[in-house]
Structures are given as structure tokens and as C-alpha cells.
Amino acid sequence: MNRDEIERLVAKAAAARRAGDLRGSFDALVKAACDFGDAQAGADLTWMLMHMKASTTHPDVDRAWLKALTVPWERSARLAPALLRYLQLDPAVAQALAAPSDAALLDGAVQRLAARPLFQSLATLAIITDPRWQALLAAWRAQAFARWSTGEFGWVLGLEWLALQANLCDYVWPVDEDLGPLRTANGAAAARLLACFEHPGPSARSQFEEADALLVQRLYTEPLQEQALRDELVRNARVALPDTAVRDQYERFPYPRWMVEPTFAHAWPPAVRPLMETPREQVLLAGCGTGLQCVAARATYPASDITAIDFSLASLGYAVRKCRELKLEDMDFECADLLAYPARGLRFDLVECMGVLHHIPDLERGAAALRELANEGALLRLAVYSPHARQWVYEQRRRIEREGIDGSLESLRRFRRELLQGELPPALQMSPDLHCASGLHDLLFNACEHMLGAQAWVELLGRHRFDLVCLDPPASVLAAAGTGAANWGVAEWEDYEQSHPFAFAGMYEFWFVARG
Image 1 (spheres, one colour):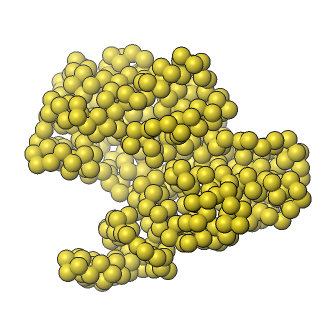
Image 2 (cartoon, rainbow, N blue to C red):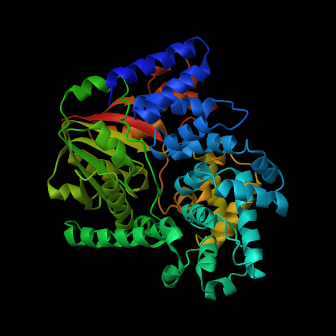
Image 3 (cartoon, one colour):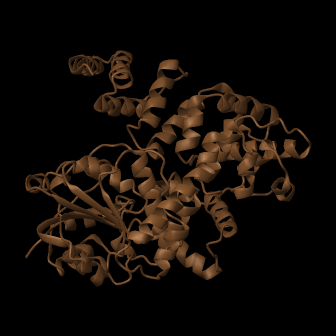
């Protein structure tokens, strides 16, 4: 890698941007990021892609988008809305989006999309959350089924990409067709088409062809790999696993399923940076789930020994497979219950507990376990729910209980259709959680969930000898809050939430230090 050339290109991009020459800045970043593989140039290029207002497609822009999506330089869920806007600059696609029931327009759009690498990658890697695009994909699937039903077995153009997207969504799209004949049919066309509606089952594996390799990998190879990893984790388990409703949920619906993830380190808030001067040799990811957290953790703590635990075998199997796929093999995975894990006698210099504590039935026991696992002076990075941002979730759960809605796939399909037809909070409209079964279960059907205010979370941890270092708001929230917000304490952020209830739509993120 020619570092001098990269730095020259990055400087050229910055100078061009200051001069208002966005094309010159874009070209320099494309060369630095796509040709030389510079990650920071890639991040800058991605920002340009997400904010550009292109009027037509261009091969260089296609190339940049493809790199941004597949390297990746940003999470695919954040890229998807802007990338969909770019794809619909194609007149054939735009016309079909406006009238998905028009068969001729749909044919034109399908031919364009199925042959376009950008759409292929997007359908493979990210949940498409735009309702208009979902309507187009549903119409594509319905037309394919109608043609198959009348004997047009050859009309399977691009169905593998449609099937991959349906699988990413956990088959949560409504099904109005009678799939009986399709389930009993033979041949690759029938297998591909069925995979657009539901998992075609083990007996259909032999029906797929060489061109379906990626689909076969997603449907069969990866689940078998995860099962083998689960068996290995069970053999090595040292702590008994609890038989709880929360654990059962994540065994049935491991969440989130992810395909690619940027390998960038966390940006520590200013109050935390001096504390990181103390070596953090032993790091614990307490409840690592499907491994998304592991990617950034390894980049953030490159010299540390990292242990990742979770009590869901399904989640851990997914996590280990994905981390091995990314060559992140230098961390230890254990299937363990957080509440029982202190009995192992292990202690850590830094603990990350992201989105876990609020699912433990006894919060006091959960906080006590975290303190037992932390050395004196250890840091705790904690992410937990905000009651303000979850108000809509409260309301929907009351409705679920009132109407007796269960968590079956068919109920999810009906309930989700009703939700999408109503008014949704802006922070949730494009959330992948609303567009896949595992996400809906985590969002609306979780077996146990506590939602305290920021001060109440701080007081809970304080009772267990954790002192608050800071609340770490998302960069977008910090910018929106204005001058001085970087120095706010918990009380100021709680005041801000009163008028901006979705400020912490993801979660609160706190940093604590363990006192003696």
C-alpha cells in the first residue's frame, strides 16, 4: 500500500470539497478507498454517497456503492435507504415502484434489478425496509408464482435474490397464495420460488442448481455449521444454563441476524479517554448475542484478551460462525448465564453489557453479577432501554395482551401488516426490527424487559458500587442537542428527552467505573 499516495488523495479530496468541487473530491476518495483500500477514505466516501443528490446513475457511483456495501464502511441498514433512492433513479424501477401491479412495468424493473450487482448485494446483505420497495418485491413474488402456476417454469429471473431477501426477513411478508402445489413440486424453479415464501425444507436441497450456491449456503450450509458449533459449545459449557422464557426466545429467534459489519473501533467519549490509559487486559462481553458486538470490540481492544458469553446456544452458534468468517478467532466464546458466571472466579478490567441487563428478571441480581465480574477500577460499558423511546412499544404490548396476539409467524404477518398501515413513530418506520420476525419478537414479544429512566439506571448501578463516568449519546443526538450538550449530566439529558422522546431510540449508553 502506498501510504504517501493515499494521503495525497485524501488531501486532494478535502481541498476539492472546500472549493466546492464535489466531483473532484468524490473521484479522489474513490481512488483512495476503492483502489488502495483506505478505510478512512472509505468512511468519507460513504458519507458522500449517503448525502449526495444524484440525478442519474453512473458506473463510478455504482462501484463506490458496491464497495461501501460489501467492504463495508458503514452498516448496511444505514446504507440501504440512500442506496434504494439511488437504484430508483433507473426509470424502469421508478415506474414499477409507482405502479407495482402493472405487469409490464414490473417485468421491466425485474429485468433491470436482477441483472444489477448493486441490487444483488443489497438484497443479500440488508433488510429492505422501504414500504414501496417491499410492495414491488411482493408483486414480483406474486407474479412469479402466477406464472409458475400456469406452466411458465422458466420465469425465474433473479428469484435467488428475492429468496435471499425473504430469508433475511425471516419470511415475515404476508402470504396470500396456496403454496400446497409448490411444496410438492420438483425442480430448481419450484425450489427457488418456494424459497421466496418460506424455507423449502431439507428435502428440497437437492433440487437447487449450481447457480443457487449462495442461496444454498444461506438456507442449508450455514445453519448446519451453526448446529455443529452449538454442539461444541455444549460440550465445553462449564456453567448450567437457565430454563427461562427469555433464553427460550433467543434460542428460537436469535437476534440480530447480520451479514456484514464495519471493523471500526468505538469512539470513546472524552470522559472515558483518560481511563483507557490504564491497560484493559481482560475484557468481557457479557451477553454477546449473535456476535455483532464482537467485531467492534476486537477493533477497539486490539491487545486485550476478550471473552464473549451468552446463554443462547443459537445466538452463540451464529456469533462464532460469523467471527470465524471474519478471521476474528482470537477471542473465547462460552455459553454461560450472566447471573451464574461469577462462580467461575474470573474477573475483568472492562465489561461491556449491551442490551442485556434490562432483560434480566431481577435487576439487582444482574447488577450484582456485573460488579462481581469487575475488578476494582474496571470500566463498565452499559446499554439499556429508555422508557421515553419505548412508549410506543408499551402501547403495542398492551394491545398484544388485550387482543391475545401470539408470536407465531402467521400472527406476526397479520399484526405487522396492520402496523405498517397505521402511523408509526419516525424512529421506527425504517427500523429493520419491523421487517423481520426475529426483530419483531425482540421488539414486541420479549419475555422480560425493564425500562427505567436514565437516573434510575444510574442509581441501580450505584447501589452495586459502580460510579457513573458519563452518558454517551449518539453523535446525531449530541449534534442536535447543541452547544454544551457534550458536558451535560444525566439530569440534563432527562430534561432533553421530555421534548425529544426518541433521542435514545436505540438505548442509553453509559460508562461506569467499579469502586472498591
